[in-house]
Amino acid sequence: MNVMLIASNTASTPYPVYPLGMSIVAGALRDAGHDVTLFDLLHNGNSLDALISLIRESKPEIIGLSIRNIDNVNSVNEQRYIDGVKEIVRKIREETDALIVLGGSGFSIMPEVILREVGADYGIVGEGESLMVEFVAGASRGEYPGERCIRTSLRLSGNEIAPAYYDSGLMRFYLKSGNIASVQTKRGCHYGCIYCSYPVLEGSALRCRDPEAVVKDIRTLVDVHGAQYIFFTDSVFNDDEGHYLAVVRAMKKNGLSVPWTAFFRPQGLDDESVELMKETGLRAAEIGSDAPTDKTLRRLGKSFLFKDIIACNDLFVRHGVASAHYFMFGCPGETRETVLQGIENIKGLKQTVSFIFMGIRILPDTALVKLAYREGLLTPEQELLESVYYIAPGMDRQWLHEALTKAFQGVRNCVFPPDALDNSLQMLHQLGYKGAMWDMLIPPKEGRRRRSATG
Image 1: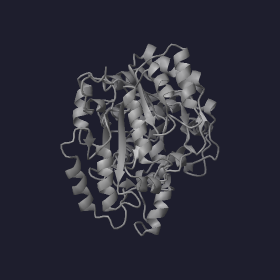
Image 2 (image 1 turned 180 degrees about the vertical axis):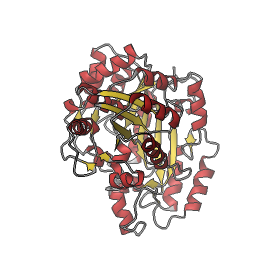
Image 3 (image 1 turned 60 degrees about the vertical axis):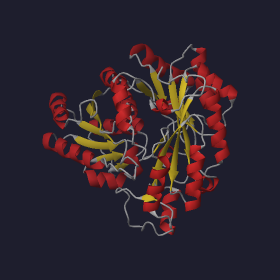
Image 4 (image 1 turned 135 degrees about the vertical axis):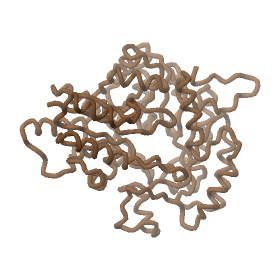
């Protein structure tokens, strides 16, 4: 069948992110013998006219529409993306009778609500590469699911996760916008963070791809597409089971050394593992520290303390790897005392960058939403498509905002609100700089020049 896949993401801050999910589904459909046309909103300047023109040219029978994010999870400067998806569907309806199927991580967080709001025909919840292939195969026979939201209780094994189809035209665009190419090494998350949707979306068991398959993806990106920087998209790269080390060892065995970055948990790392990762190109580490005091870390379901965050930070500094932390204020158990302590803890971190969020976006099927119900912050009938942010009961929002603004104003390596420097980082990417770019905010070490993650 003739299928069009659309990446609806329009967020380009701090840099555009290659539509990996859509590309994985595209690869699976192509392998199943279907004709696949790709359209990316960012690549086409967010032009719906360009989309309609391509629909007229390719005449798809089925259109898959990928939703990456519902909003930007930034309570200080909220941006909502579902209205844009709704407009895309409306324009498609005016042009064609092709079936419209929603998918993507953003859709899977609250599928029934989004499907109703957007007005598409069907939606695929979870891993799209298998379900979309099954849907298209059934449609080719005139068979359609009885339920509009298509689910399965089965999850793909690591070896069943399809490699991405990296479209050359899309890749050229994204490489020009930061030179960062995306690779996934595994799915699943077994940590118990109360706010996180990853276990809901991907399950709690790790499903790891063959390290050689990961290396093959990287080879394709580097040798075929000219990628100069790799971003591993795993929810946590340094898993407790050590799969990340198997990937890094496979890279080393195959002679791969290309600058890369990933999300890290501030536990389970040592000098040997960091040095091994550096040998294959580790340049920058984004650390999910999440809360800046022991009290709020425990209430978020973390198994580490702030001393572990300091140790992890110092480990990366010692090895010359740029690092950035992400912290949230307003967590369960937050008080004025923990806020002030957390501010000082963050300022005490050396040679790093910290991005600070106020409040936690509440998502369905997480422990946080249940807590919000118990504390009276939500009612059971309240839908979460409209963003709701958790801030601990009794915490004055205005005071919190003023305290964070005052504390971090003028502190170069502490960014509040978290999007405050987005325009500057985008401009640097447009000028040809590559990599994470936030590393340029790290104060240089006294007496020695810091090696930039962009070099």
